[in-house]
Image (tube, rainbow, N blue to C red):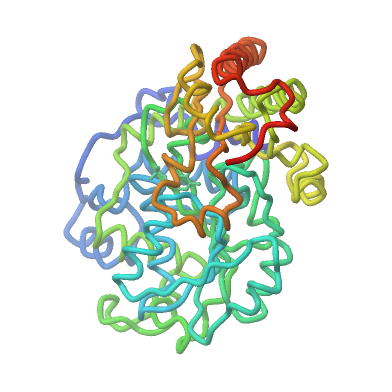
Length: 437
Ligand SMILES: *Cc1c(COP(=O)(O)O)cnc(C)c1O
């Protein structure tokens, strides 16, 4: 089926006594077993089915199947937040503790996780320039067990050369984990381009309405985890599994079963069924929203690229963007809702933000409503100067997450605020003459 159809139908057909059209909300912590024998089999993971909602719930399961279908994956595990999806997807690969090679332009929460909490766990991270494939190869160590990057980075929308990076990783039996939050599967499907695992903050574009938090880990089911010395957590016998291995038990579903039966079960960041239902409702309109947002982003770029007070717009649609060529082949439909606007001077940042009437100052992306943020003091405020620069940011950069309003109204709001801010700071209207602090 096409993604438009999967977005509406994958994972659910009306069934049962009432055949409800909408995926029903199964608000139950536990499930009745027909017999003791059935309970024994299900608890031993020898028989599929629901035992307790920390590790699986029928409503959550519909969401898992729907996102797996949209991403072209074999299995998915939903989590309480995107943050949990990133953490669990990587904990499942790096116990020991092991080493990760990661892009230096990542979501701020992921940077916190990597540099602080994972560091506490002994998991080491090498950050590399995402755009330089040779840097990924050079950073590999004997205990590297994952590559981690975002398909489209935030807020500069750098597009990852996934086929090149995956080729380097696979040569050394390293799985590639890709955060596809910003792009959404409507714009790029990392598993089709060589990635092995995709993670999402479903809070953002998948849900689209900004009313719930959630995350998803999607597995291609194709990575070779059969080397038991390298992947003991998957290929070696475990006491917990009566001395069998996850690979023996679950074959290509072994990785997702590790995420679910060990990490989701033991650490407990489970998605609430009501949240899953909310995300499912959002996904139904994702293809329509993605198309509208793409048109609005193009309109804003056109109108603002030369506007007084704007030094640069960072977006792959523009020829000067470093990902311009790559985006034409890997993300032909667009890169999603984010647009980075670099103002002509840092002193314009506060007045421009505070002068917006329609657009809200808020730290979210992929919402119905258009939002602006200032990465250097908000989402990326814990990054050092060096990390900020490595992420291609400076103190004049604003991030816009374009929503579903009429782009003409968005444009009018931005230009009135810019005009006022420029007049108030008495900056010259010629952006070329405004010096950077
Ligand atoms: C928001 C976000 C996350 C974290 O997701 P939460 O749902 O907020 O926990 C991870 N990666 C990216 C790219 C994000 O935008």
